[in-house]
Amino acid sequence: MSTAFEFHCPTKIVCGKHALEKLPDELVMTGMSHPLVMTDAGLMKLGVAAKLTDVLDAADVTYDLFSDVPPDSSMDVVNQVAHLYVEKGCDGFVAIGGGSVIDTTKGAAASLACNGVDFATLQGSEILTDNLPPFIAVPTTAGTGSEVTLVAVVKDTQTHAKLSFTSYKLLPHVAILDPALTASLPPKLTSTTGMDALTHAIEAYTSTQKNPVSDAFAVKAIELIASNLTTACTTPDNLDARTNLALGSLMAGAAFSNAMVGIVHSLGHSLGGLCGIPHGQAMMMLLPHCVRYNLKHGIHAGEYGKLLPYLAPAKAEELGHQASKEVLDQAVCDTLFAMNTYFHDNFGAPLTLKDLGVKHEDLPAVAKQARYDGSALYNSVEVTLEMAQEILEAVYE
Amino acid sequence: MNTRTQHHARGIKALYVRILLILLPVLLSVFRHVSKRIRTEIGYFPDGFTFMLSVRGKDLACACQKTASGSFRRVKPSEIASDVEPGSGLASANPSAVTIDYVIDFRSLNYAFDCFSGGLTLTAAFAQRAFSTRGSNDYGVALTYMFSALLRMFFGWRAAWRKPAYSSN
Image (spheres, each protein chain N blue to C red):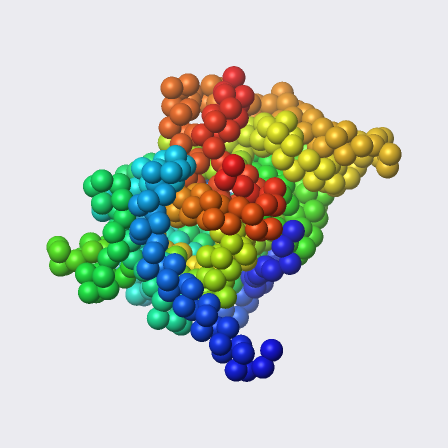
């Protein structure tokens, strides 16, 4: 592990039951009087967005609403939002939703910070020098961690590629985690988004940019996610489990925001861009297979096993202190496969690419795009076409 | 180390980096014939693809353009479009000007020197955020693979490149 690193997480975290009721205070603290509220049609229909707008209405806050963020947002939507913001005279953003809503808001806010330039021209790292407009993120899934990350992932509809933007300036100023907002999330979606968060933590722990601070966040995130994900799926209205899961997702986000990710995300971004596979489902399917591939090739040997006490404490205790590194590594891999099987059997989470309608002949193109995905640079070995293809074949059926 | 010696060392590092930047298009053009890996990554870039390496706060920069034959040529500063930002992907109003597709901007001379002298792999430099980038991510990845292959040929014997973590095999 390198001792030369940077770690940045300035987002104010407002967490717990009734946290959303603090929103009017946070608007004042961040200097917003006329926010643009960002959300999607699904959250409008389910009445989740209304939980936030009701708070704004009760506090007599003037706001405008953009509720058309698609599940797989694009540059066009980002630029559309930036125009709307200017047209309506807004002075900040409140984003309520999953990763797509929050990342779209990041894009629009970044574009506005650069005098309305096309967000597509800002690809790369550390390009933004100006601060974003005030920005409060209210996640409704416990998965992406986007409320505390310096990354925005947006689809380029022309190239069918998921484009990553990274900048310390992209972090929201405030993140509000209220379990009431995730309580209505169905078990299947809870499981796939939860496994997305777990992937963030595990990949952050094994990336080339890992550091002692990101490791601390990653390990705690794994513990919170592993000990609360099943409970949140089986008893959706268990608000303690929901809060812990949201916090685990946030901490995993802070970990990977600073340590970055690896091959699971390279493949997942490529599957999302080329085949339209939802990010959480891709992460869930790929994670155990990537761990198995890595162990088979001696990659991160002895590292995965260190996570067992946090991922599966009972199993770690059963194996005891005398267990070899190989046994511990394998136990982590087996636990991840077992989690997927459980979520598949109980909540219908898909396990194979074939189940999701991916065509076998698309795999070489997915492998090539994965090799050149930005996440590949943080994998501890070079992502080759052969490696990507082998993993995709394993996940296929 | 006293101030005069430090100044002298900085001067030598700057000279070394300047020479490397001047030689870069020649090195890539020559070593593509030697290394299949370099040739493969060069093949990822479209003809006319142009990248720039620079060192923040120093008069050290080099822009290289891929030719139709797969070699690289040095782009003179006077040829570079001045109406669009390098790496933005925007087209210049001047059709004869060269636009930069990807920029790697080292945050200090020491980081650039460490990378160009084999003391730091590009991946380790990424992890330390030793440079900022601008342009399409896939180009950044391909450039990293290409430079890693080139640097390994020269500095594979150095400790940073002998570490098992991240190798270009």
